[in-house]
Amino acid sequence: MAEKTIVRGVKIAGQPFVLRSSDVVHALRDVDPEPITIHFVVIDAKRFPPKQVVSEVTGLDRADFTTHQARRTLIRLGFPAGRRGVAASNPREIKDRGPLAPSPDRLTDRLRSLSGQWVAIKDDDVIHASSSPRELVGWLGKHGQHADTMFRVPEDELAITGLAPL
Amino acid sequence: MRFGFRELPDPGPDGVRGRPIVDVVIEGLEIAPQACLLDSGATAVRFGAYVAELCGIELSQAPRRELAVGGAVVEARMAEVDLLVRDNEDSYAWTAPVWFCDPWFPAFGLLGLTGFFDHFEVTIASYEEWIELTPIN
Figure 1 (cartoon, rainbow over the protein chains, first blue to last red):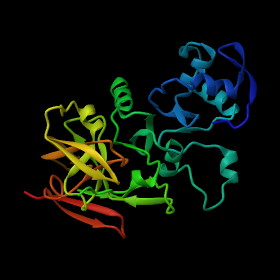
Figure 2: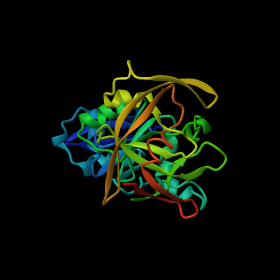
Figure 3: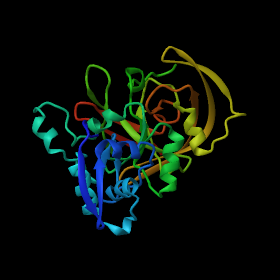
Figure 4: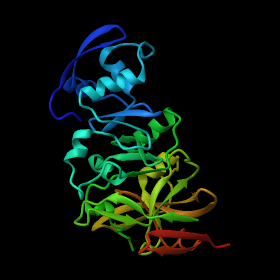
């Protein structure tokens, strides 16, 4: 998520827009992310296809612009971007990170921001996160997706311990 | 079948800890295998009641018990359920009694003695962080 608002004037599909990172976050707050094919951007800890985001924010038809245009626009607004199977890149974060700091390369570290949520994982990627297991499985069914695994990201020690009942 | 330990974020002081977790397909719900901890301290296989709901398992007439889990008393209902584990090459399916609990605190299902450990020879190599499951025929 962008920490402070970045404003950019951009031209997409021949039309001028003034986009604010805070408006993008707000516009996507209640939007269900579609499955990631290759590219994604991270907005408020969720991964979205770049074209879905730009279409949502500008109202443009997705056929009117390319993934590359959408991705570049969102990166300039400060949102991390990545490809499936490769960690999201945010040059500033990588530069600031110490050698022992958490790494976005590790799924475990990417899961931390989703504490308490239900996640579906495929090929080491979080393909969807949700506040309820029913909603998560509903999303998988709706989008024809198969997860490798699903679980709730542990939010406390009680959630991570075996707690073997007698 | 061999599986590596699974790392999950650990809110405790360790930060990250690999655990013996495998994914189990329950009642053919292939789109969403459930992460399950191998727990030799549990006497049976236990999941949250939400798993029964996801899989369409009817529990209203099922045998009922009260269990103490994590210091709280939870209601558990039992059903005979089809389970499946697989790696890249092999798979093994079996039917086991499963107790569905409400409320449910763990982040994953628990694979205990009856219904899991009595179906496999289980090797847990904690130092090297892998698990091997060999079905008992």
